[in-house]
Amino acid sequence: MTDKPATLAGNGLAEATEHSATVETSALTYEDIQGYSVEEKNEQIELPNNSDLEEIKGDIIEADEVAGDGPDVDGVTGRVNDLTLGDEKPKKKKKSRPKVGKKRRHITGLEENFCDPPVTPAEASEEKQIYAAEIPFPQRIEECIQRYRQKRKLKERNAHVFDKYLFFGGIESSQRQFGGMDIDEIRAATTDEIRQMTATEFIQSGVTSAKFYNPKDTEDWVVDFEGVVKGFLSRYITECFSSIDPETDTRQAGQVIHNFLNYVLHHDVCPEYTANIKAAQAICQVAPDEMRAASDLYAALPDSFNTATRFLFCDGGIFKACEPEQPASETPEEKKASGWEGYETRYNPQKLDAHLQLIIFRFNMMDKIKDETLKQTIYETEPREIRVVNTKSQAYQIVSTHRPSKRVKAHNEEMLEKENLSGKVKPTGIAVLRPTVIDHAWSNVPRPEDVDDSQQPTETFIVDDHLLAKMVVGMKMQLDVCELNVGGVRFIKECREVRPSFDTLLPQSLMQTWKDPVLNERPPPSVSRPEVGHLDLGKMAQDDDMEG
Image 1 (cartoon, one colour):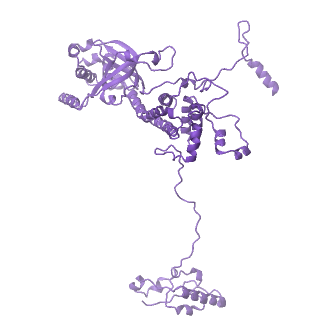
Image 2: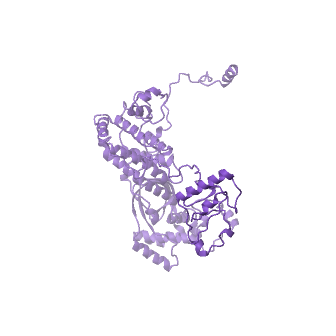
Image 3: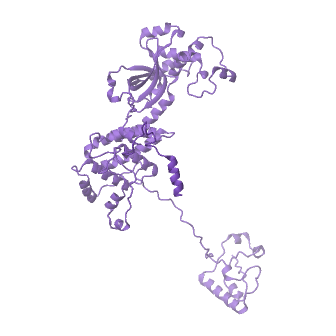
């Protein structure tokens, strides 16, 4: 390789040319390097080592001191700081940047796979004294709740759910008034003392209210973890905490309660209620799926068979079905004349094919009725002579379901395919229901404990198979049921309500807006003195003007 010395400005440049290395600068022009061959340009240029570089800098500084800063030579400046020599690069000032990294996710204690850390020997010894069997249960559970809230970071939604759950259990968790603390007292207090001073969950002692549990009056109270969970998830979450998706609401609430019950078991707070607590946890696990099924049943009933039967025998569709088949008209004028224009419900007779509804009814009657005599009667009876003879609104409880087998489904589909009706008649099965009572705490309606459901006769209904898959034994439904004049055949006209199998009405739920009565010494109004007991608004206004 041919060494070509770098061109440097200023006196003393001869000293720099004595070195064999070449100094590369960004100011070199194309004319300076045009004498290089391609091979020479591709090779890496040798640069001076550190000792040689120091000599070059020293010579240039001396030359600058003697002659001053000379003009640029060949477009290359003579300043040392502008040279880029060897591996040394000019240092750039780093810009301050905020630290970029993953934000630390705070553990709330409600994560799916979260478990409490093992109890240390010191904690175990302390908890044996706190949760000793001889200590009354109200004191133990109060201490447990306060410690649980200290160890869990509940967000606003979860905190609201947990507070309402405690309310359903008769425990007050509202904010304490006049709870100010001196800062010196806080500094001198221990961790347990601070927790007790700042806790909002407590069981009444002293000042009593009929709204919460009173240790001095336990006649109407029992310890039932399972019952409280049933009532809370089946009534409060669905009625007072509802959103578009009841499954999500129930799942989130169930996770909070399940986590608390895990804490109770882990710290051995009340071993005498272990079985009851585990039963409550089982309700937390099955509740979301069952609430979703109940919501789907309410939205889908009446199904295809019951809709067809209702159309035929409640809305006069049977007379239209027995007429010669004509193409359906969908003109706006005919819709308006029929009275169903703008009728936006899941049941719209205007959109139903009368002949297809009659096929659905007769096919399922022949398929599901096992009594050959009744089957023959329905087959021989003129369709227009079949009518509704009784209608009632009744609460039912699901006793059992009988879904069609794969063989039966395949056989029925084969028969329908021969008649060019494939896919138009859905598979159906049998739902066995028993009359019951859904508790709503009405004074003029019997309570469930006053009615012996086991003595009630069961009733059978034909229901679509995909809805039978969602029915759970024990579910309750409020239905409008019609009975036909052929063999007592019943069908579902309307579904008013669907309740899960664990549906429970807690008396405590009626106390949510309760306020204890206050003695009023003001005399009541009478015929002779009607003004007594009423506020004189005019006088109050005059008093306000005088004060102003």
